[in-house]
Image (cartoon, rainbow, N blue to C red):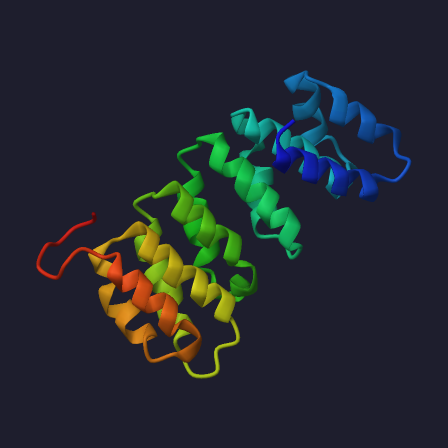
Length: 196
């Protein structure tokens, strides 16, 4: 059992309490049992999270919709486990969904994991989405500094020259300046174009 699954099962076990369903869902190796639990009416959130994570980590695309919903959950631990499973899932829809969640200004408080997932995927949607989110975070008194910082760091990791203008703007924000200097240092030289 890998560390991500171990952490998830420990958290979910505590949520499940004495539920007999927990042991069944944690122990089964049958993807059909897991998929049935994913859509069965009345399932608690912990059960849906557990089976979606297990199916997604195994590359079973039936978990996609449930994982995307969890990626935008108010609980940061659920978002993080969904992001890990989506990264392993290998579904072409993942980057588009993560970009839509990251750029949804009504859900910006929950954008951290979609941003990190976009960076990990290195999908074509990643750079435009991170630029959009970061530009919005550069407004005066924006409360979402962790989201802004994740964008700055992610744009540095992606190393795409299109990020230069917004990273240059970020230099004027004390909370972002050091990360912006580092990110700018990872971009290709001006005039070199493209990604590195």
